[in-house]
Image 1 (spheres, rainbow, N blue to C red):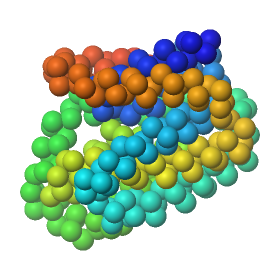
Image 2: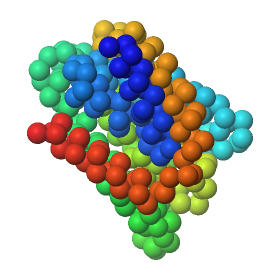
Image 3: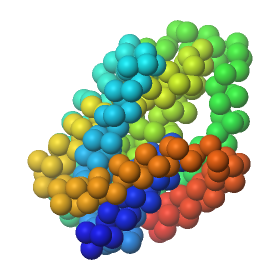
Image 4: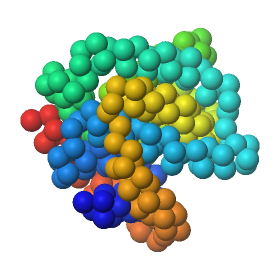
Length: 259
């Protein structure tokens, strides 16, 4: 079974390296549906897995100067308290009981379905975010701080429940809110914000006993080389083929989790 986990980590890491899609969108449903891991344990383990794998990316972006720390701070003001309150709620509800499992799987299904839509309509959403419509531009200028903090709150709740959302969904929100920022700066800021968010949420799950550290080690053993190799071959696979296929897979998995 450990070999199966390591192989899964290798495959997911490779896909993440090729597409840039967050590992939680693939790893968490894989653990639940293929290996029969309980939803809470799958989420908790994947959160620490995400925190550890994103540290390197955040360090590189910071070294290159492609992290907007003011933006990261605004997101964190909303996301970190939201993650803590969500953890308290899950703990009070009983993180491993039937109601919590249903909440996790249904919310995960919705998040995966939304992620699939983002992948399919990425260019259209980016174009809309960069449009200079009068009302949209005025609204952004007036409410940019509060909107960013609110985005952090939503991401904090979603990531703590499902381990999904800090990647593709977070990037779409940032493109809408910060159209004047370069894509690489938004990616770097998104990754830098994901590190403390997934770490706090993951440690909270560890406190509740929903992190399998043996499983975590097996996943990391496969995913780290997978990400490395995937990042080196990403440009060789046509984006207009890869993303629709991945979006379809995520939509099917999301639908299966909801029903």
